[in-house]
Length: 145
Image (tube, rainbow, N blue to C red; front, side, top):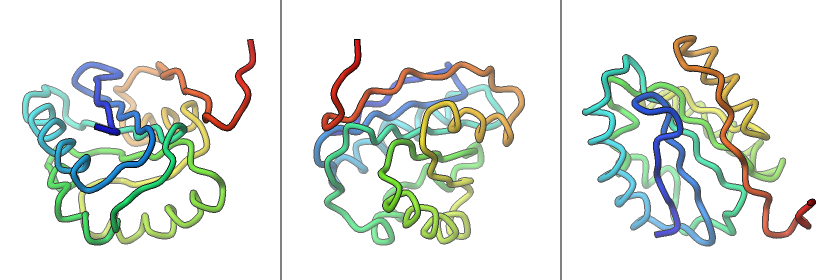
């Protein structure tokens, strides 16, 4: 699986780290993970952060796969924040965000970094503590000590 899911903040914020090439099968596996977590959560809203800093590319059509991601229409769906896309892809994602917002319950946004992702989520849901997940550096950037 090119996507790994974990609770960043238990019962409130799911962190999905994407690496390499991700496809429709990964989305379906994610659906099987995220929706049960939302069902089990005691929180009013559950938010999802997709960390794309290690992603090489997507091998699916976003508009075609929206029906796969049923959790985007879940009654507890809050913010759906994509982090780490290059600026051109981030602009395209934000244009598509309007479609995602109209077709789902998700409040979609694409932001530059994890700090902005948490700020976005906290604007939607002040009950979320301000804990910023560590963000992996893209494979193309040299790692700094």
